[in-house]
Length: 129
Image (tube, rainbow, N blue to C red):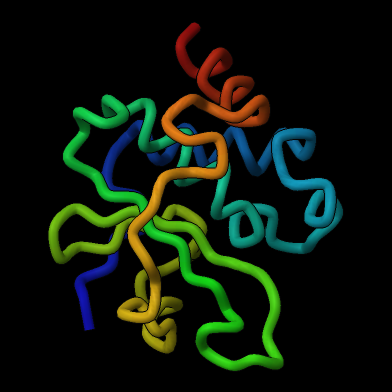
């Protein structure tokens, strides 16, 4: 089981607050959910990655396809790794990651490669002011 951090610094805290308060940056399927941070793994991971320096940050991008865990499952979960440490801003508490099969996830680029998506660009612009 890797070490898990959910809010490693002030930047992470600011991203989480922004995503919580701005439903328009969440994926359209999750804009009305009870826990907006939990349902925003992609934009949280992508924003943190870019605000930490992008490809120069030392962070690796990972995606867990839930159907790799069980063919009846759907969806994906995005997070970052700093060596053996999982950086998952979408969790409320590190213990929420205890049952996640982190080792099934694959290292990859974001959907938009290494350029910020439109939703992430909004977060970056808001936090860089």
